Length: 577
Image (cartoon, rainbow, N blue to C red):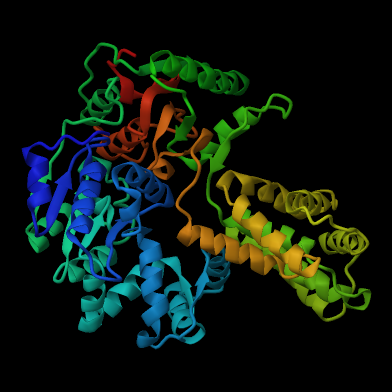
């Protein structure tokens, strides 16, 4: 957006102390924050100094980075450090975690690995909170949920570290400040003694207050601790100025239907029978796209179909996939744990096989990897499958050949077939080849793993992984330690990636959409898989309304509400769309 400096915005630029900017989606909070950053940089920074912009998600970081490219001259962009909280705290731990008694060399325990370890540990009666502390101090493995607590511990115990980081960043911008957890907020508060803090917040987008440490009173805490200049940009809309999307979202939030249509908002009702529902989901994509294109000044490049529950995401994705011959291409954003662990199994299949005399050790490694996938899924059936696979791994490691026609026997046959198969050096082609070996091995657990691994493309990890595998092939002529390359690529992507390409069609929960923007948004309502009003919440459903508002305001040009014809949601009662 073009920045118009009004009196309110000028007060932000002039202020040397703490600042709190509040406002709704598209009100210009990020724009004025970047203008403030530009001013601080232009005034002059010492060598090693930069302005720090902290946000929660890689998508939000990408959005800020894109905006900075238009607002900051190229010569100044190197002085703006845009990071997620995770990446910032990880850098602190890598450099100074040893002061807390941890080994000097720390390694990430990725969320998918933690999920597998945690389910098994707790299933055996262990306290995972105690175990993850032990892993940090004795082994040097750190889970993501410990990043902020450990960084807080370091900053609270060391005045020197507070002074160091405050001097490195003369201005720290905190995006989505209303959603900061307690340890994240305390780190910001501690640093505020030596640097200028600028918080950006929207109370009507606080949808993560169910998480431990996230308080609905965070803005009050900020006001009490920092005593900032508070500037409210409420009522301004630069994201969808040619529509009434924000007005509709606010009316949904406040339960004040205008009983008239909204420009840029439409509704499509569907019959609940599965095949008719799925047909309507597919039709909704085309209808929403055409509606947006009719009013937009530029090409429509991105569309999101949002659900309130993960179950709804699955319904939408299956509908768009169809029978395979009529696929509507889309990317799904769901829980990554099982998918990433399944991908590690595919990477194992790419690696050179052990000699035939050691094939049982090879088999044991594969069975252990498969067991880890099912541990991460939780649920009694999956945990029982994991236990059977782990038992088979122990037997193979002890030299016992698997019984005929079992999962272990099928995997052994697949590994034997790979021993004589030559890969091409084309990572994409070889990956698909290895995955097909798993899928066609003739065992349901292996087929499930292969199907999970197919979803890796939905997370946009492919480029970094492909580069890592290419490097292995070029230096070794084989995919030796492909699992290690995969893990490194995923870890780098998790912490360092600037975000995902949001062009095309995306399917996700509304929670996952936070911090993202799309040209078009479809909100899917279904009482069984994606209820807009939570059955666990009493009227007037303030939390549900806040969540749906977040989903609606992801749209730039058009929102389509996709609703069950026979059980219409009370959320839209008296709305005319």
